[in-house]
Length: 282
Image 1 (tube, one colour):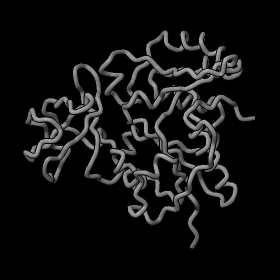
Image 2 (image 1 turned 135 degrees about the vertical axis):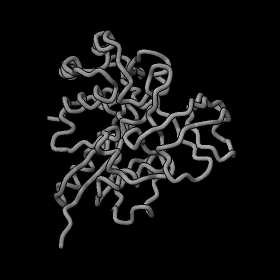
Image 3 (image 1 turned 120 degrees about the vertical axis):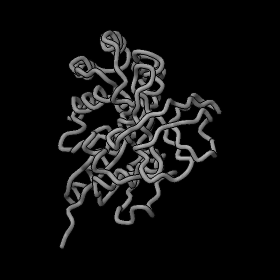
Image 4 (image 1 turned 90 degrees about the horizontal axis):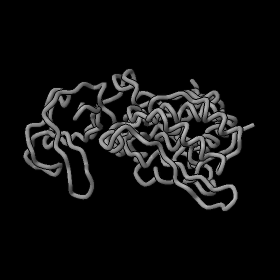
């Protein structure tokens, strides 16, 4: 009995033009597919909330100086704590950004940028990548998808998308002590995330040693997304991949022993990996 290869790579939306390391992952996956066949799956972790993930570094066409561009968002709370699939983009952001782009990229890419229609950061990034032709023939699985969340395995460490001050924020679940049904409990303490009281909490990390403890609430599995350390087993429980293309940063925290059925492949090397990929494949 043979197993059809499922070649996977994972990544948060990483700039409205994708970072070059994502392009390298895609190229590595396509090379593997050409060698062994099978399917390519992009595990898009659009549940991440860090606005730095979508920072886009472009080089000025005349001076070659780098510039950091990013989305703007509706308000501070949303920018800092809402997941990327819920970070709403102001209506004027796309037009204002398009006026800057001739300094950095060629006209064909600007035209693709102008045609994208998306209300949030994650959707915009994915539509841009599709418009550039990068995702042709690749199945995209999003960590925000309720059907995916219902199907995954349980993990001991996770975030929860919950309402807070008129927005949906991604709060860290801190167990305190083991509980049999984490989806049925709420926070009843005002202590920060290091509490040893045994009372489960949902918290937002303001930075440094500062945490915001959220009001008591209940939540369902459709609101849960994994932490960095539990993302591999969470993802693998629904994707069942045979090969995983790992980036340089991922190798520092991936735990291959949790998924011995996966063959891990280092992504191909690429120069200036954190800068934006600004070509449209022919």
